Length: 177
Image 1 (cartoon, rainbow, N blue to C red):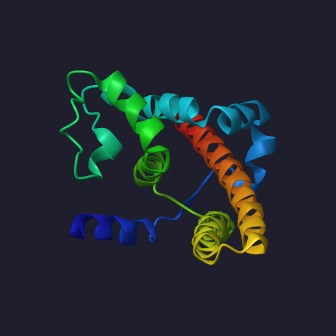
Image 2 (image 1 turned 135 degrees about the vertical axis):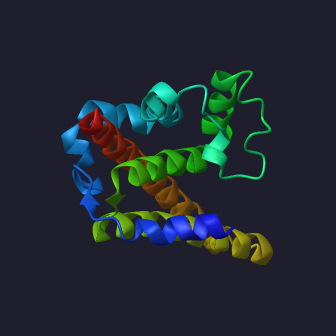
Image 3 (image 1 turned 90 degrees about the vertical axis):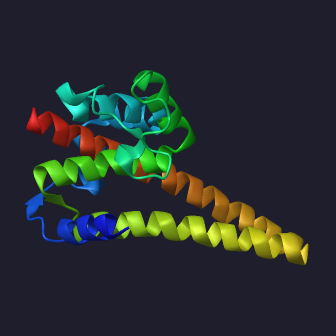
């Protein structure tokens, strides 16, 4: 939608920086980073509530209104369950939604390094998907093994970057509070 495009364009103009970069997140709060690595959905759940502050639960909508089903999921009657479903079923969107909320509230922009890490994470996921498709069509065991290896790399990259993002966001919320 036009509103989402306008928000994305506005985020490019933000001039505040995160308190810590993604690369420094594990050292800045190693305990939370480990928690986010092994229990990402739980970390994302608590983080959204923390980010919303006094607006929770009255102003909660699934993915902050960013999906076609937002506002129609029973958020007002059972926000705890809806947020739980959001972070379990739509973890990437849930995490990104909280990130965008922080960026919009505090006018925080990603660094080039942040964008590079996030881009690499997405790229490895796409390469793994493409290799998996080629392996399925070709039935070549060598391509299947390569697809398995890239899939493993993609999963580790995803889990690591997500843990760092959640940690970076947690530090930023603490800074605000």
